[in-house]
Image 1: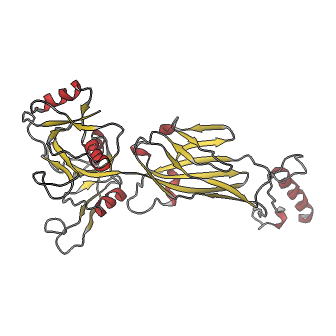
Image 2: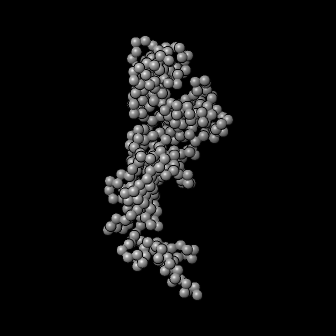
Image 3: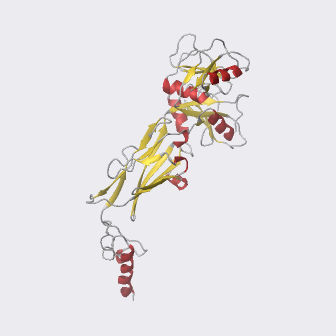
Length: 371
C-alpha cells in the first residue's frame, strides 16, 4: 500500500514546488528538488541545483550624522543564470548593541525591526526609516541600502536578506557613527541621574547614551574619568587610563571599571553621552560685553542662532576642529570652551573641552551659539 502512495505523494509535491515545470508551462526558477521518496522520511526534501549567494564587501561601515550612507549587499547565483529572476529583499535592523560588550548576538535578531522590503519595482519602508531609505540597484544583484539624513539612533546591525523561492540567504553589516563620548552630570550635582534621567539628559544636549563599544573606543583614545556613568545597555562604568587611589586603586590595570547592571530606577549615577557631527556651525559670539546667562540666550537669538548645547560643542571640537580659548555659556547653564591645540593660559596641556561647571547664572562670560 505504501508503495502505491509514494508516487501520489511525490506528484503532490511536484504540483506545489516552483520547479514543477510540467504542471506550469513557461515557468521555471532553475532549482531542482528531489522526489520526497528520496527524502529523510520527515517531510523534508533535498536540494540539488543552482545556489543563491548573498555577500557584502564591507561588514562594518562608519558615517557622520546627517549624511547619506550605503550599506553594501549583493547577491548572485552559482552557476550564473541566463535570465534574471524575481527575488524579494528585506532589510532589518537591531539597534546598537543592547547587551553590552561584543557583537550583537544572533538571537537578538528575534527582536529586529523591519527597515525596508522590496520586490521588483515595488518597495515599502517602515517606522523612522520611512522616506529615508532606498535600494541602490547600481548593477544586477545590487541590493545595497542607502540611508539618507543619518540620525543618532540609526546605529546598529543591519541584515540584508534575499529570498528566492525556497532559498533564503542573508548577510549583516554594522553601522557606526563617527563621534565623541563625553561625561555629563546634573546641574544640581554628581550622581543624580537614574537610567531614564541619564537618557533624557543626553538627549537634551543633542546626544545619546553611549554604548559600551563607544566608551571603550574613547578610552583607547585617552578618555580618563573617575566618576561612574550610565551606558545605553543599563550598565554603569567609567574609563581609567592612569590607575590611582579612589578610582579602583593603583594595583588595578587601566581599562573600563564596571559596576555591571544596575536597577534603572533606583540607582543614580552620572551619564556618558555620545554626540556625532552636526550640520550647523558652533561659534563664539563676538559681543561688546560679557553676558549673564539670560543675556547670552538672547544674544544668540538676536544673531539668528540659538545657544549651543554641550553635545554640539563636543562634536564641533572633535570632528570640526573648533578651537577657542574663551569661556562661554551653553544651553544647560554650564560654561565651557574647546581647545584642539593646547597652549599656555588655555588649561591643561592636552586638547579637550574645558569646563567651569555650572556657575551662578548672574556671572558674566561669553557665549557659544549654534546656527
